[in-house]
Length: 371
Image 1 (spheres, rainbow, N blue to C red):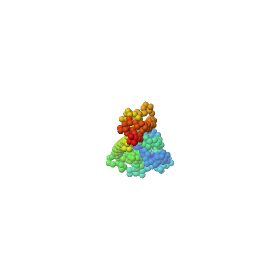
Image 2 (spheres, rainbow, N blue to C red; image 1 turned 90 degrees about the vertical axis):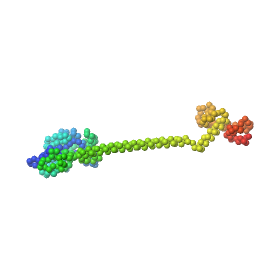
Image 3 (cartoon, rainbow, N blue to C red; image 1 turned 30 degrees about the vertical axis):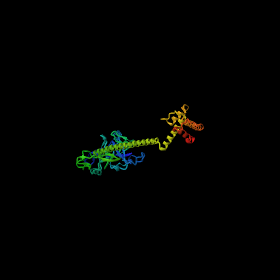
Image 4 (spheres, one colour; image 1 turned 90 degrees about the horizontal axis):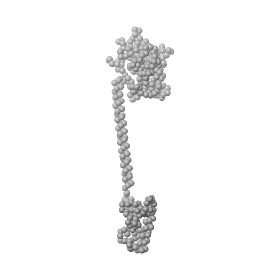
């Protein structure tokens, strides 16, 4: 895969023959930005349509012996040609040549170079000063983070130089250019990027997925804004979480109260049910007194009254059994009581007493007619 970088020439000078000679930083380590079409032209990795791919060039690859040596004795071109430069076409593309004293300069590779074409030298005088390496390499799509904390999408390996192009704007940044902080010779006009005595070096950063060129101060401002936005996002997330929890807690509280209300409603008897319950109890008490005048009914439930009258024989029986036994016993008792009262005119029964009236009434007898 053939890719292109960008750098600038340092300490240029013109020879007596008019050639432009300089030492230049031509390549660097770190992350550089490529389009998907550049790194995946056949879409084998599925990233050809992506606008930006962050490619990391580790020191171990940039400063490998074979990689550095590959930039020696390479043709210099005016812009990148549409094909790789070789012995078959170098005359059509070359405007100069790199030397063989390849060295590391911090994060950069520095090479000596000479530009011999008059038109290209004039372009340099007019401000066309940045450099871009043409080279072949392998791209390993393995996303990660650099030791400095920068995220990348792929790693560049096996770098091999092909040519060095003079361009208007290069990928490696303004430090890779023909012309260093020493400036150009007196008889050569300074590059337009020089403002007064200060060189405005630019760097490329990623803002919301897009590459942006800015100064160190601009990067610091962007990073500060990123920090503020991150803090605001965290605060908003916390507030939303707290609000959602408060609503959930309140919903749970209301649901619990609704359940309590339903339970209380079940415990409240309406008038008809209350009347029926009173009538049932009165009937049971009346029948119980008829069967056992000494039975205690106060404070006892209907079931307890039935059990007291029926005795120990129903001690371990179910409620349904007790209800059936009670119905049978009270039915026989009521019939016998009425029958005996009519036949014998048993005046020992106090018919003037309210309890006696109740007994006969419960047996279905009209006491006045019986008398």
